[in-house]
Image 1 (cartoon, rainbow, N blue to C red):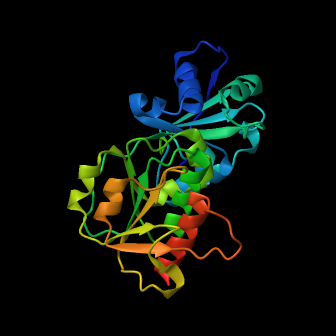
Image 2: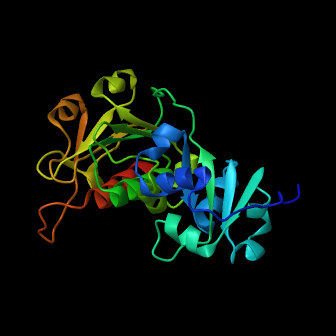
Length: 255
């Protein structure tokens, strides 16, 4: 497959660029457009490695001659824009020079027996992306984000996830009753109750619940839990960052 001849766009008011700007700068624009924006060589390559093909590839004028062959040949449509226009769209301090517009995956039902991570109103995009990265690394392929959680396909979460999105099944914006179909044990972390995680025999597969940065897991999820895990903190800190706690818990489940 040879590279598609690029279409050059020079107007800031071009309809495609207006939509792209929204995808890059509005955390929930992907829900309206059914597409999302992945900026940078790393994210684009991560998508291709997982067999995810872009609908459109976008390059800055200075980057287009240097574009990796696999990226330049990945999409049916290549668009080249002035560096200044790319910088205007980019959400990065140092624009990457390339990005993919990708179709949002079709909504998936909750898989009852799949190892899962439940996100309960986790609001920081960096935390959410980091948890997704840990989930992918430790074999938890289903992410169930309850309402109030940061938008999973937003640019900031995508960047923090470092490509993990493309290997996961992401279910977002659901109510608690969506968990009724889960047939795996629910495990909740707590700094005040439960067995020390290093002493636990964590059920496999299971679903780990990670809660709001300030409030933790909600009472309804606590009532659903069959196991409680406590992370030892001999240094005396009151609590751990939720992404750090998730990494510890998911790693323990992979052993």
